[in-house]
Length: 129
Image 1 (tube, one colour):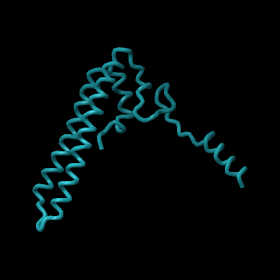
Image 2 (image 1 turned 45 degrees about the vertical axis):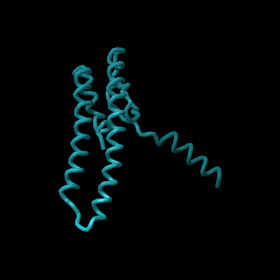
Image 3 (image 1 turned 90 degrees about the vertical axis):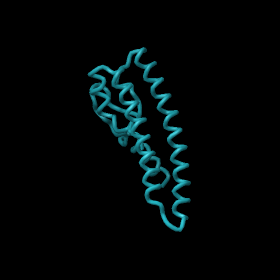
Image 4 (image 1 turned 90 degrees about the horizontal axis):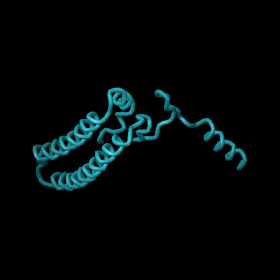
């Protein structure tokens, strides 16, 4: 039985890797930008953009946690204040879209037209959830 499980494990490693073919790049790790062949200047600029984006997303995450607590308090009230809930959710969604749009704008300014075209293939993984 152990031999069979080892065989299955080795078989899954050998044939289980999903490959994506896009240009000269076959395998893609999430949020890896190696396929763009950035020059050193682009890498530095994008690194700064991504660092700021990460800080912005951490702040958004903190705000989401606060919103969850506020939502729970709203729900425990005698009457549910739907306007307050909607306002809270719209603020979070607006901030989320703002963070994503700003990152995409900055990336657009740095990437060449060909790199933008390649970036589109994996753009979905950069969206804020």
